[in-house]
Image 1 (cartoon, one colour):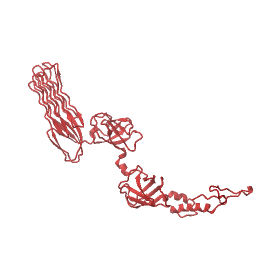
Image 2 (cartoon, rainbow, N blue to C red; image 1 turned 135 degrees about the vertical axis):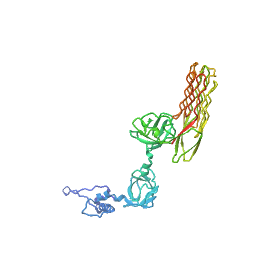
Image 3 (tube, one colour; image 1 turned 135 degrees about the horizontal axis):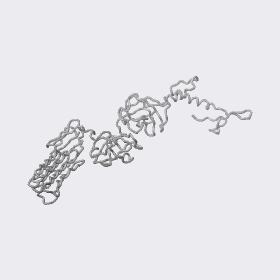
Image 4 (cartoon, rainbow, N blue to C red; image 1 turned 120 degrees about the vertical axis):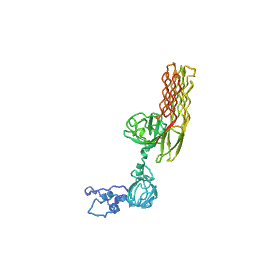
Length: 455
Protein backbone atom coordinates (compact mmCIF):
# COMPACT_ATOMS: atom_id res chain seq x y z
CA UNK A 1 0.00 0.00 0.00
CA UNK A 2 1.33 3.42 -0.98
CA UNK A 3 1.01 6.71 0.86
CA UNK A 4 -1.71 8.76 -0.78
CA UNK A 5 -0.97 12.47 -0.41
CA UNK A 6 -3.68 15.18 -0.41
CA UNK A 7 -5.22 15.87 -3.82
CA UNK A 8 -4.15 19.49 -3.65
CA UNK A 9 -0.49 18.41 -3.23
CA UNK A 10 -0.14 16.34 -6.38
CA UNK A 11 3.44 17.48 -6.97
CA UNK A 12 4.67 16.34 -3.54
CA UNK A 13 4.18 12.58 -2.93
CA UNK A 14 5.16 12.98 0.73
CA UNK A 15 3.07 16.06 1.48
CA UNK A 16 1.43 16.01 4.92
CA UNK A 17 -2.22 16.49 5.62
CA UNK A 18 -3.18 19.78 7.29
CA UNK A 19 -6.33 20.98 9.01
CA UNK A 20 -8.20 23.94 7.57
CA UNK A 21 -8.73 27.19 9.54
CA UNK A 22 -11.30 29.51 7.91
CA UNK A 23 -10.59 32.33 10.33
CA UNK A 24 -6.99 32.37 9.19
CA UNK A 25 -7.73 31.67 5.57
CA UNK A 26 -6.04 28.23 5.66
CA UNK A 27 -7.61 25.61 3.44
CA UNK A 28 -7.65 22.04 4.78
CA UNK A 29 -6.19 19.16 2.79
CA UNK A 30 -8.43 17.55 0.19
CA UNK A 31 -8.60 13.83 1.05
CA UNK A 32 -8.49 11.40 -1.89
CA UNK A 33 -10.67 8.28 -1.77
CA UNK A 34 -7.59 6.03 -1.80
CA UNK A 35 -6.38 7.49 1.50
CA UNK A 36 -9.54 6.20 3.16
CA UNK A 37 -10.25 3.07 1.16
CA UNK A 38 -6.81 1.43 0.90
CA UNK A 39 -5.97 1.32 4.64
CA UNK A 40 -9.36 -0.21 5.35
CA UNK A 41 -8.91 -2.86 2.68
CA UNK A 42 -5.40 -3.66 3.99
CA UNK A 43 -6.72 -4.13 7.52
CA UNK A 44 -9.69 -6.17 6.33
CA UNK A 45 -7.37 -8.42 4.33
CA UNK A 46 -5.31 -8.99 7.47
CA UNK A 47 -8.42 -9.83 9.50
CA UNK A 48 -9.76 -12.22 6.87
CA UNK A 49 -6.38 -13.92 6.33
CA UNK A 50 -6.47 -14.87 9.99
CA UNK A 51 -9.87 -16.49 9.52
CA UNK A 52 -12.01 -13.77 11.11
CA UNK A 53 -15.10 -12.09 9.69
CA UNK A 54 -14.74 -8.28 9.76
CA UNK A 55 -17.20 -6.67 12.16
CA UNK A 56 -17.82 -3.14 13.40
CA UNK A 57 -18.71 -4.53 16.82
CA UNK A 58 -15.15 -5.76 17.46
CA UNK A 59 -12.48 -3.12 17.07
CA UNK A 60 -9.64 -5.43 18.22
CA UNK A 61 -9.74 -7.76 15.25
CA UNK A 62 -6.40 -6.61 13.83
CA UNK A 63 -4.66 -7.33 17.12
CA UNK A 64 -6.39 -10.71 17.36
CA UNK A 65 -5.37 -11.59 13.81
CA UNK A 66 -1.72 -10.91 14.60
CA UNK A 67 -2.03 -12.71 17.91
CA UNK A 68 -3.44 -15.85 16.28
CA UNK A 69 -0.25 -16.62 14.33
CA UNK A 70 -2.36 -17.99 11.49
CA UNK A 71 -0.75 -15.66 8.96
CA UNK A 72 2.45 -17.71 9.15
CA UNK A 73 0.93 -21.13 9.82
CA UNK A 74 0.46 -23.99 7.39
CA UNK A 75 -0.10 -27.73 7.33
CA UNK A 76 2.74 -29.48 5.54
CA UNK A 77 2.22 -31.44 2.38
CA UNK A 78 4.67 -33.24 0.14
CA UNK A 79 6.70 -36.16 1.43
CA UNK A 80 8.60 -36.84 4.66
CA UNK A 81 11.87 -35.61 3.14
CA UNK A 82 10.48 -32.94 0.80
CA UNK A 83 7.87 -30.83 2.60
CA UNK A 84 5.61 -28.30 0.91
CA UNK A 85 3.54 -25.57 2.56
CA UNK A 86 1.64 -22.40 1.65
CA UNK A 87 0.88 -19.38 3.80
CA UNK A 88 -1.60 -16.56 3.07
CA UNK A 89 -0.93 -13.95 1.87
CA UNK A 90 1.73 -15.62 -0.27
CA UNK A 91 5.22 -14.13 0.06
CA UNK A 92 6.76 -13.12 -3.25
CA UNK A 93 10.26 -14.14 -2.13
CA UNK A 94 12.10 -15.73 0.79
CA UNK A 95 13.99 -13.27 2.94
CA UNK A 96 16.23 -13.73 5.99
CA UNK A 97 14.13 -13.64 9.14
CA UNK A 98 10.93 -14.98 7.55
CA UNK A 99 9.14 -17.15 10.12
CA UNK A 100 6.68 -19.94 9.52
CA UNK A 101 5.11 -22.63 11.70
CA UNK A 102 4.19 -25.86 9.97
CA UNK A 103 2.27 -28.84 11.26
CA UNK A 104 3.77 -32.07 9.99
CA UNK A 105 1.71 -34.95 8.68
CA UNK A 106 4.60 -37.41 8.49
CA UNK A 107 7.46 -38.28 10.84
CA UNK A 108 10.97 -37.16 9.92
CA UNK A 109 12.82 -39.63 7.73
CA UNK A 110 16.21 -37.90 7.59
CA UNK A 111 17.50 -34.92 5.60
CA UNK A 112 14.54 -32.65 4.78
CA UNK A 113 13.69 -29.70 2.51
CA UNK A 114 10.78 -27.24 2.52
CA UNK A 115 9.25 -25.60 -0.54
CA UNK A 116 7.24 -22.65 0.81
CA UNK A 117 4.65 -21.22 -1.59
CA UNK A 118 6.57 -22.78 -4.51
CA UNK A 119 9.57 -20.49 -3.91
CA UNK A 120 12.05 -23.37 -4.14
CA UNK A 121 13.33 -26.24 -2.00
CA UNK A 122 15.42 -25.11 0.96
CA UNK A 123 17.12 -27.37 3.53
CA UNK A 124 15.52 -27.75 6.94
CA UNK A 125 18.14 -27.87 9.70
CA UNK A 126 18.22 -27.60 13.46
CA UNK A 127 19.39 -24.42 15.15
CA UNK A 128 22.86 -25.90 15.59
CA UNK A 129 22.96 -26.71 11.83
CA UNK A 130 22.41 -30.42 12.53
CA UNK A 131 20.72 -32.26 9.67
CA UNK A 132 17.54 -34.02 10.85
CA UNK A 133 17.57 -37.77 11.32
CA UNK A 134 14.72 -40.25 11.31
CA UNK A 135 12.06 -39.57 13.98
CA UNK A 136 13.49 -36.20 15.05
CA UNK A 137 9.82 -35.19 14.90
CA UNK A 138 6.66 -37.20 14.58
CA UNK A 139 3.48 -36.82 12.57
CA UNK A 140 1.44 -33.93 13.96
CA UNK A 141 4.46 -32.05 15.33
CA UNK A 142 4.68 -28.26 15.12
CA UNK A 143 7.96 -26.98 13.67
CA UNK A 144 8.80 -23.31 14.16
CA UNK A 145 11.06 -22.40 11.25
CA UNK A 146 13.03 -19.24 10.51
CA UNK A 147 14.76 -18.64 7.17
CA UNK A 148 18.42 -17.64 7.55
CA UNK A 149 19.03 -16.79 3.90
CA UNK A 150 19.98 -20.33 2.92
CA UNK A 151 18.09 -22.78 5.14
CA UNK A 152 14.99 -23.02 7.29
CA UNK A 153 16.28 -23.35 10.85
CA UNK A 154 14.13 -25.21 13.36
CA UNK A 155 14.01 -23.03 16.45
CA UNK A 156 15.26 -25.58 18.95
CA UNK A 157 17.75 -28.39 19.49
CA UNK A 158 17.40 -31.80 17.91
CA UNK A 159 16.54 -34.71 20.22
CA UNK A 160 19.15 -36.79 18.42
CA UNK A 161 21.85 -34.22 19.23
CA UNK A 162 20.91 -34.32 22.89
CA UNK A 163 20.87 -38.11 22.91
CA UNK A 164 24.29 -38.42 21.27
CA UNK A 165 25.86 -36.21 23.92
CA UNK A 166 28.20 -34.88 21.25
CA UNK A 167 28.37 -31.38 22.76
CA UNK A 168 30.18 -32.73 25.81
CA UNK A 169 32.02 -35.65 24.24
CA UNK A 170 35.50 -35.54 22.74
CA UNK A 171 38.41 -37.76 21.76
CA UNK A 172 41.65 -37.04 23.59
CA UNK A 173 44.55 -35.58 21.65
CA UNK A 174 47.92 -34.36 22.82
CA UNK A 175 50.17 -36.85 24.59
CA UNK A 176 49.65 -39.64 27.12
CA UNK A 177 50.09 -37.30 30.10
CA UNK A 178 49.22 -33.91 28.56
CA UNK A 179 45.81 -34.46 27.03
CA UNK A 180 43.95 -32.01 24.82
CA UNK A 181 40.31 -32.05 23.73
CA UNK A 182 37.97 -29.82 21.75
CA UNK A 183 34.22 -29.46 22.23
CA UNK A 184 31.86 -27.91 19.66
CA UNK A 185 30.47 -25.39 20.33
CA UNK A 186 33.47 -24.21 22.32
CA UNK A 187 32.80 -23.36 25.98
CA UNK A 188 33.74 -19.81 26.96
CA UNK A 189 35.18 -21.07 30.24
CA UNK A 190 35.45 -24.19 32.36
CA UNK A 191 33.35 -23.65 35.47
CA UNK A 192 32.70 -25.70 38.58
CA UNK A 193 30.46 -28.64 37.71
CA UNK A 194 31.40 -28.68 34.02
CA UNK A 195 31.32 -32.31 32.88
CA UNK A 196 32.54 -34.08 29.76
CA UNK A 197 33.11 -37.59 28.48
CA UNK A 198 36.49 -38.16 26.86
CA UNK A 199 37.72 -41.13 24.84
CA UNK A 200 41.28 -41.91 25.90
CA UNK A 201 43.65 -42.41 22.96
CA UNK A 202 46.89 -43.26 24.76
CA UNK A 203 47.32 -44.90 28.17
CA UNK A 204 48.86 -42.50 30.68
CA UNK A 205 52.20 -43.23 32.31
CA UNK A 206 51.79 -40.99 35.35
CA UNK A 207 50.25 -37.69 36.45
CA UNK A 208 48.13 -36.19 33.66
CA UNK A 209 46.51 -32.90 32.65
CA UNK A 210 43.72 -31.88 30.25
CA UNK A 211 43.63 -28.69 28.19
CA UNK A 212 40.05 -28.27 26.99
CA UNK A 213 39.51 -25.97 24.00
CA UNK A 214 42.76 -24.17 24.77
CA UNK A 215 41.43 -22.90 28.12
CA UNK A 216 44.51 -24.07 30.00
CA UNK A 217 45.89 -27.36 31.29
CA UNK A 218 44.15 -28.63 34.43
CA UNK A 219 45.26 -31.68 36.46
CA UNK A 220 43.23 -34.88 36.13
CA UNK A 221 42.78 -36.55 39.51
CA UNK A 222 40.98 -39.58 40.87
CA UNK A 223 37.57 -39.34 42.53
CA UNK A 224 39.28 -38.92 45.90
CA UNK A 225 41.63 -36.21 44.62
CA UNK A 226 44.80 -38.27 44.19
CA UNK A 227 47.26 -37.74 41.36
CA UNK A 228 46.87 -40.37 38.63
CA UNK A 229 49.10 -43.42 38.48
CA UNK A 230 50.30 -45.11 35.31
CA UNK A 231 47.45 -46.92 33.57
CA UNK A 232 44.61 -45.04 35.30
CA UNK A 233 43.60 -43.68 31.87
CA UNK A 234 43.50 -46.71 29.59
CA UNK A 235 43.53 -46.37 25.81
CA UNK A 236 40.09 -47.03 24.34
CA UNK A 237 38.16 -46.21 27.53
CA UNK A 238 35.48 -43.54 27.96
CA UNK A 239 36.17 -41.47 31.08
CA UNK A 240 33.77 -38.96 32.64
CA UNK A 241 35.48 -35.89 34.10
CA UNK A 242 33.91 -33.16 36.26
CA UNK A 243 35.69 -29.86 36.97
CA UNK A 244 35.90 -28.96 40.67
CA UNK A 245 37.36 -25.48 40.25
CA UNK A 246 40.97 -26.65 40.16
CA UNK A 247 41.06 -30.19 38.74
CA UNK A 248 39.18 -32.51 36.42
CA UNK A 249 37.96 -35.30 38.71
CA UNK A 250 37.28 -38.79 37.43
CA UNK A 251 33.78 -39.71 38.56
CA UNK A 252 34.81 -43.24 39.52
CA UNK A 253 38.06 -44.74 40.76
CA UNK A 254 40.36 -46.26 38.13
CA UNK A 255 39.70 -49.72 39.55
CA UNK A 256 36.03 -49.26 38.67
CA UNK A 257 36.60 -48.23 35.08
CA UNK A 258 34.67 -51.15 33.69
CA UNK A 259 37.06 -53.97 34.68
CA UNK A 260 35.14 -56.22 37.05
CA UNK A 261 36.73 -59.60 36.31
CA UNK A 262 40.28 -60.85 36.74
CA UNK A 263 41.79 -63.97 35.17
CA UNK A 264 45.24 -65.21 36.21
CA UNK A 265 47.30 -67.62 34.10
CA UNK A 266 50.66 -69.13 35.05
CA UNK A 267 50.79 -72.14 32.74
CA UNK A 268 51.43 -71.74 29.02
CA UNK A 269 48.18 -72.03 27.06
CA UNK A 270 45.47 -69.93 25.44
CA UNK A 271 43.11 -67.26 26.78
CA UNK A 272 39.75 -67.14 24.96
CA UNK A 273 37.73 -63.92 25.17
CA UNK A 274 34.37 -64.55 26.94
CA UNK A 275 30.99 -63.53 25.55
CA UNK A 276 30.09 -59.89 26.00
CA UNK A 277 33.69 -58.70 26.34
CA UNK A 278 35.05 -56.07 23.93
CA UNK A 279 38.00 -54.65 25.86
CA UNK A 280 40.67 -56.25 28.04
CA UNK A 281 43.61 -54.91 29.98
CA UNK A 282 46.57 -57.29 30.14
CA UNK A 283 49.45 -57.33 32.62
CA UNK A 284 52.11 -59.73 31.30
CA UNK A 285 54.97 -60.50 33.70
CA UNK A 286 58.25 -62.13 32.70
CA UNK A 287 60.42 -64.67 34.51
CA UNK A 288 62.82 -63.64 37.26
CA UNK A 289 66.52 -64.43 37.54
CA UNK A 290 67.91 -66.98 40.02
CA UNK A 291 70.01 -66.08 43.03
CA UNK A 292 73.78 -66.62 42.98
CA UNK A 293 75.65 -69.40 44.83
CA UNK A 294 78.05 -68.72 47.70
CA UNK A 295 81.22 -70.36 49.02
CA UNK A 296 82.65 -70.83 52.50
CA UNK A 297 83.72 -67.22 52.78
CA UNK A 298 81.56 -65.17 50.44
CA UNK A 299 77.78 -64.79 50.03
CA UNK A 300 76.26 -64.14 46.59
CA UNK A 301 73.99 -61.55 44.94
CA UNK A 302 70.23 -61.83 44.31
CA UNK A 303 68.49 -62.43 40.98
CA UNK A 304 66.52 -59.64 39.28
CA UNK A 305 62.75 -59.38 39.32
CA UNK A 306 60.92 -59.56 36.01
CA UNK A 307 59.50 -56.51 34.23
CA UNK A 308 55.80 -56.20 33.44
CA UNK A 309 54.16 -55.04 30.22
CA UNK A 310 50.64 -53.61 30.16
CA UNK A 311 48.36 -53.39 27.11
CA UNK A 312 44.74 -52.41 26.57
CA UNK A 313 43.29 -54.40 23.66
CA UNK A 314 39.96 -54.23 21.83
CA UNK A 315 38.74 -57.79 21.36
CA UNK A 316 35.82 -59.87 20.10
CA UNK A 317 34.22 -62.81 21.93
CA UNK A 318 35.88 -66.10 21.04
CA UNK A 319 39.17 -64.47 20.05
CA UNK A 320 42.13 -66.59 21.22
CA UNK A 321 45.41 -65.33 22.66
CA UNK A 322 48.19 -67.95 23.11
CA UNK A 323 50.66 -67.37 25.94
CA UNK A 324 54.07 -68.88 26.69
CA UNK A 325 55.53 -68.29 30.13
CA UNK A 326 59.26 -68.47 30.65
CA UNK A 327 60.55 -70.51 33.58
CA UNK A 328 62.14 -68.72 36.48
CA UNK A 329 65.92 -68.87 36.56
CA UNK A 330 67.38 -71.61 38.77
CA UNK A 331 69.57 -70.66 41.66
CA UNK A 332 73.31 -70.83 41.03
CA UNK A 333 75.41 -73.72 42.35
CA UNK A 334 79.13 -74.28 42.95
CA UNK A 335 79.67 -70.58 43.54
CA UNK A 336 78.12 -69.76 40.14
CA UNK A 337 75.74 -67.10 38.88
CA UNK A 338 72.00 -67.70 39.04
CA UNK A 339 70.34 -68.67 35.76
CA UNK A 340 68.51 -66.23 33.50
CA UNK A 341 64.74 -66.63 33.33
CA UNK A 342 63.03 -67.83 30.16
CA UNK A 343 61.30 -65.61 27.59
CA UNK A 344 57.58 -64.88 28.07
CA UNK A 345 55.28 -64.05 25.14
CA UNK A 346 51.60 -63.29 24.70
CA UNK A 347 49.06 -60.60 23.74
CA UNK A 348 51.50 -59.01 21.30
CA UNK A 349 54.24 -58.60 23.91
CA UNK A 350 57.61 -60.26 24.45
CA UNK A 351 59.51 -60.15 27.75
CA UNK A 352 63.04 -61.49 28.00
CA UNK A 353 64.05 -63.24 31.21
CA UNK A 354 65.84 -61.35 33.96
CA UNK A 355 69.40 -62.37 34.73
CA UNK A 356 70.64 -64.11 37.84
CA UNK A 357 72.78 -62.70 40.61
CA UNK A 358 76.55 -63.23 40.54
CA UNK A 359 77.99 -66.05 42.61
CA UNK A 360 80.95 -66.19 44.95
CA UNK A 361 83.24 -67.36 42.15
CA UNK A 362 83.28 -63.77 40.90
CA UNK A 363 86.59 -62.42 42.14
CA UNK A 364 85.43 -58.90 42.96
CA UNK A 365 84.65 -57.16 46.21
CA UNK A 366 81.16 -56.20 45.00
CA UNK A 367 79.01 -58.85 43.38
CA UNK A 368 76.26 -57.40 41.18
CA UNK A 369 72.66 -58.46 41.42
CA UNK A 370 70.81 -59.65 38.33
CA UNK A 371 69.47 -57.19 35.75
CA UNK A 372 65.77 -57.05 34.75
CA UNK A 373 64.76 -58.25 31.29
CA UNK A 374 63.31 -56.11 28.50
CA UNK A 375 59.75 -55.63 27.21
CA UNK A 376 58.54 -55.03 23.65
CA UNK A 377 55.00 -54.45 22.38
CA UNK A 378 53.55 -52.98 25.59
CA UNK A 379 51.62 -49.74 26.02
CA UNK A 380 53.45 -49.21 29.30
CA UNK A 381 56.44 -51.02 30.80
CA UNK A 382 56.92 -51.47 34.54
CA UNK A 383 60.55 -52.48 35.16
CA UNK A 384 61.51 -55.15 37.65
CA UNK A 385 63.95 -54.47 40.46
CA UNK A 386 67.59 -55.47 40.09
CA UNK A 387 68.83 -58.16 42.42
CA UNK A 388 70.47 -57.11 45.67
CA UNK A 389 74.24 -56.76 45.34
CA UNK A 390 76.83 -57.86 47.87
CA UNK A 391 79.69 -55.65 48.93
CA UNK A 392 82.22 -55.90 51.74
CA UNK A 393 81.13 -59.47 52.43
CA UNK A 394 82.28 -61.65 55.33
CA UNK A 395 81.90 -65.28 56.22
CA UNK A 396 78.85 -64.43 58.30
CA UNK A 397 77.06 -62.24 55.73
CA UNK A 398 73.60 -63.05 54.44
CA UNK A 399 72.94 -63.51 50.73
CA UNK A 400 71.59 -60.69 48.55
CA UNK A 401 67.83 -60.25 48.26
CA UNK A 402 66.15 -60.91 44.92
CA UNK A 403 64.40 -58.17 42.96
CA UNK A 404 60.64 -57.58 43.02
CA UNK A 405 58.78 -57.98 39.74
CA UNK A 406 57.29 -54.88 38.11
CA UNK A 407 53.66 -53.77 37.94
CA UNK A 408 50.78 -53.99 40.41
CA UNK A 409 50.64 -57.79 40.19
CA UNK A 410 54.39 -58.41 40.26
CA UNK A 411 55.63 -61.08 42.67
CA UNK A 412 57.70 -60.25 45.73
CA UNK A 413 61.38 -61.07 45.77
CA UNK A 414 62.92 -64.01 47.54
CA UNK A 415 65.03 -62.95 50.51
CA UNK A 416 68.66 -63.90 50.74
CA UNK A 417 69.68 -66.76 52.99
CA UNK A 418 70.75 -65.79 56.49
CA UNK A 419 74.33 -66.20 57.68
CA UNK A 420 76.00 -69.60 57.63
CA UNK A 421 73.49 -72.37 57.08
CA UNK A 422 70.53 -70.15 56.08
CA UNK A 423 68.37 -71.16 53.12
CA UNK A 424 67.64 -68.51 50.46
CA UNK A 425 64.00 -67.99 49.47
CA UNK A 426 62.57 -68.56 46.03
CA UNK A 427 60.98 -65.65 44.17
CA UNK A 428 57.24 -65.27 44.68
CA UNK A 429 54.64 -66.01 42.01
CA UNK A 430 54.63 -63.43 39.26
CA UNK A 431 58.27 -63.03 38.29
CA UNK A 432 59.97 -62.40 41.63
CA UNK A 433 63.77 -62.78 41.59
CA UNK A 434 65.44 -65.53 43.63
CA UNK A 435 67.31 -64.75 46.83
CA UNK A 436 71.05 -65.45 46.94
CA UNK A 437 72.75 -68.06 49.04
CA UNK A 438 74.69 -67.16 52.18
CA UNK A 439 78.01 -68.88 52.74
CA UNK A 440 78.09 -72.47 51.49
CA UNK A 441 74.67 -72.48 49.77
CA UNK A 442 73.03 -72.56 46.36
CA UNK A 443 70.89 -69.63 45.24
CA UNK A 444 67.11 -69.42 45.36
CA UNK A 445 65.06 -70.17 42.25
CA UNK A 446 63.11 -67.29 40.66
CA UNK A 447 59.42 -67.32 39.79
CA UNK A 448 58.14 -68.06 36.31
CA UNK A 449 56.15 -65.62 34.16
CA UNK A 450 52.42 -65.00 34.52
CA UNK A 451 49.60 -62.92 33.08
CA UNK A 452 46.70 -61.06 34.71
CA UNK A 453 43.75 -60.21 32.45
CA UNK A 454 41.14 -57.64 33.48
CA UNK A 455 37.81 -57.24 31.68
